[in-house]
Length: 371
Length: 267
Image (cartoon, rainbow over all chains, first blue to last red; front, side, top):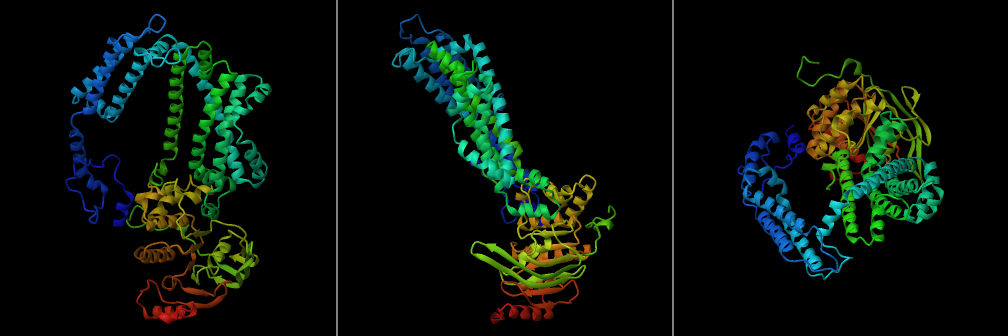
């Protein structure tokens, strides 16, 4: 059974040796240690050595310099007069950038005692530089030179102002959006999943539901908005319905294709062992289709986001979409930018959440598919 | 079971006597767009309880179709198939098929794959020990928690075997189960399969297109004609087990089988 161990035990995660340090006693592939555990002691110290040898964090130092530059530029270069008093929070923004710079400097200088933190942020070094440079360019072209004129363009410090002064309303809006989104996606995902399994499994259901899905599915849910406002008791329930609809369509289609694409042999194997139709659906068809279901969910999220925002802009009296139109009505452009950023973070957070869920549910796929 | 460190015996309750299978005057057609495809023609075949029968024939001659009929996965167009005198109308856990592909469920661990049959019949909770026994039988008890993608081809096929044996079948239907294995693994699995068959006492029906494999493993080798499948000849191999590949009697039978398949020019 010597073939057994070297086939099953892949390298434990994270001990791939750094290229800078060739492994000391790499076992030649042909000699293949019978137990991967036996190979571990040789690689682990190697790995530690590689970590200690990571050296000075030059990118961190560069980032500290960049952020210090941003702080000085913001604080010392007077803002261009913009027809009204003065951009508020310019000084606070400068101090904030200075704070980030000091923090980064501390991390580079005190790399040894703060090793745990440094290891986490190390990879982000180039991005930290880029962000500071980007903010500086933005600052220069808005507040300092006025090339991008107010009120349509706002300097970074005006966003700070919005977050500091208007955070309760933003928080409330974000909360309202999350509530709508969660309800709509949950209902839509469940309905789409059940529909998909149904048409993938039953010929009758497929005959009746599939054409409807084919015709109505591609209609953007936002196009149904005016009609649905009329049919539903409140704009809130309309929004939930439409978000659910937008999510359900791709989930149903992909669940269906997943269930329909399950290899016949899987069913044959289960059937010869006395599996009931229920067993075939729940234990064979659905687990086999799950990877596809997740693809459908990812697509459904996109539809849900756009439906949500449009519904909030047109009818629902709360949420980030509503905040956007409200800010536009007051020509409060910094508020719009601030809300857009919150929206981006919120939506990408939801997608990240789905990724985490997928990794958990489909952990068996890790060895099969390259993600 | 605790007393010996060797492979545990199949528990006494699990010891089965093989099923008797009768195939009577079976013909089978497939309805294809181009017209009906005649795959099996008036076939008669019997398997005695505990017997090991191999079906040998050219590729595409309808051997695998016959297996599906015997397993109850499809009804025969005409004729009847009997298990211990009762007609075979649907799949049943007493007749388990091992396919050429292991067809392990990739989302289940090895243990859960082997447990499939017991779970499907709703008796897993009370019979969990049978899963462990079946895994031990094929020597994979240490890989219970592994996923199928982590296994080599031979190991995966052994898991498929354990998944079949856990049901204590009275007939094991083997559809080219070793067809995709490398030749060395194949030879050792042939011996393993024969040992399992001898220990458990089920009847076995093996489809293969490997002449040597059929003769080495089976007591009777049924040679089929081209499609539609008819019995061309039955070769009886009464050599006792364990057999030796170099046995002159095997070589003679092999020559005969190849001649029946029209391949003796290279002998």
